[in-house]
Length: 91
Image (cartoon, rainbow, N blue to C red; front, side, top):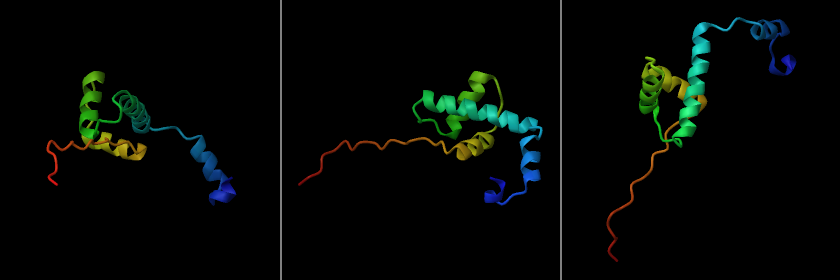
């Protein structure tokens, strides 16, 4: 596998057995929260509302930029519905 990826075996095993930093663990926890809220609210939350929901219900204070960055990595974004026209077209 390492040969196909073009990396040294030693580098792979060093990465595999590394100690995960605190910030990376927090980002993984935030990613799980984002996935949960995204499914719960049917993919309508953008990063601003997602940040407010996460901070409100979990009593945290994460920045919008951090939530936005994690959402981009997970490829999660709001589906914006188009408004229906309230008028009929003339023939």
